[in-house]
Image (cartoon, rainbow, N blue to C red; front, side, top):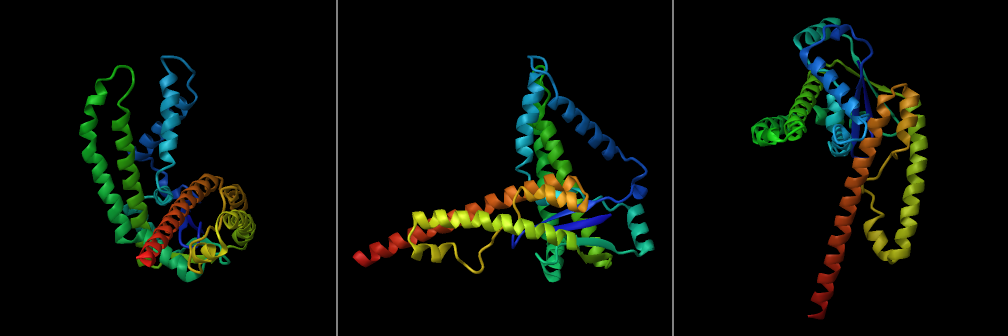
Length: 295
């Protein structure tokens, strides 16, 4: 397998695992069968025709897909990493072959890559997924009354089942990274092709930020802008949603397009919320100063 570590902003990164072959997963497990069955059912529901018998299936998938978009991109990325079973563990140790961690050297340093990997493999990350996995399992019995509804299946129950499985897979992926780090089985590799994609992405981000700054200057005095938006340590985006396709085509991993788009959307929302909070705090501080001066 090959890992991609892609910085989305100056502080947050996306991780994704590309499976290069199926040698270690030739035996299909029951979880793989259930996952395939659930995916096929979901796709069938998405294509369901309108009508009182099957129309609800399309509505469920419509709102379900929106709900899936709120799941953190870190969780989606860790789920792409296969669980560390005994057979895989033994083969990885016996082969003693380092696995590539591909990253754009122009956008993130090697030290930052190692720090990001340690965060993905850390106790805090594993504890988070363990906590919410058990939270989802505990919540399952409370969805039992929904099973009494006619025709429509127990959607809340199946959602909690999915969330429990999702957190389990994410925790397993985190544990796998931890194992690879402990045994020094990861090889950090700079990708010139990714660096080209980030150069194009940086241009898109710069133009977007320029438009935002111009709009900001129209709304606020320059002295306020210098205090809030022009900060050396302020987090900034490195990619836009449109860069997802370019990156996926350059590295020839189609699945990365959706992963990048989701991550960019979530990080943009988080940065925007933090910026608005800082601005509100600054305005409140200014009001308090004015009131203090009047006294």
